[in-house]
Length: 363
Image (cartoon, rainbow, N blue to C red; front, side):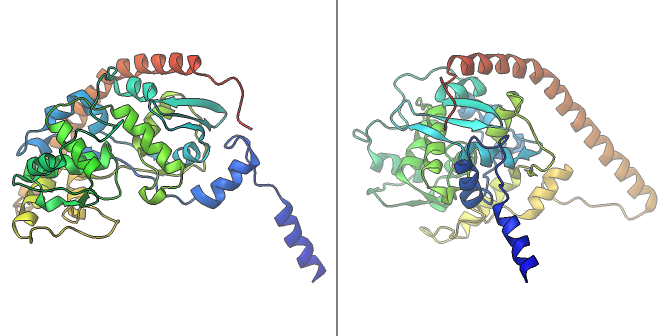
């Protein structure tokens, strides 16, 4: 009995504090209690064929283009959780900012950091985020989004299946990658106004939106999970932040494809107006697991008729492999072209962080 008690006491007294991951014991404790099992929100990869039916791709050019639409590869969930856990010195007033500490690197996070990362110019006289809501006619916004006259009272929500087709696709992308929300089924006034601004090419300050969302999470609004996992992995990787063997990784969730759009249109035609999906799990019930498998395998949107003879099957397999190799070669060419851009971007970020380096480490 005494031996068992001694063993338990030794276990309790052992300090779990890892000075490579946390700046203090308090942050280490906070991580165990609040962040160790937090859900990391990973953005969705938007395949080019998603815009074949609804050609709205150009709306994203002023928001970073491919930088906010294309995400691939493993994402370091451990780094993201530590990034959010170690946030301190928050400034909520615009321009918002905060500091954090990631594996012995002290970082000052402002909108300028993500402006450089996304290759965006500074926005003047932006329409969102709000300094004040006065002057926004939300009845006009709702009528534009839905295609019929609507009255939008503060606190009411629009439903995804009430939106016009182009706004349904825009909403799915925005909720996943830009103005991250728990689900896209219900649209708040802020969310609807973001869609309205993007569609009319009104200037919005995406980097400020990102920083404000991150601050909201650090202040306890964790129903969203930890947003911008892919963007932060890209940022921290560019800074050469250390990775450890026990880090947890995951890939971006199901891509948005042409099939997503066609399923959404079919769902809305068969639905009752004003009824949205419920729950905060998979926000788009129309996106099936088959879509993810098809996109990963390079399959077309519709099932193929496969030959029955062995010779025909062999030829079919050879053609399929050739198509996939061609796609892989195209992607590699694209990666080569982006290496120089990433190197220049890294130099800019490092220069900015050196200018914003805090005078002392957080206690």
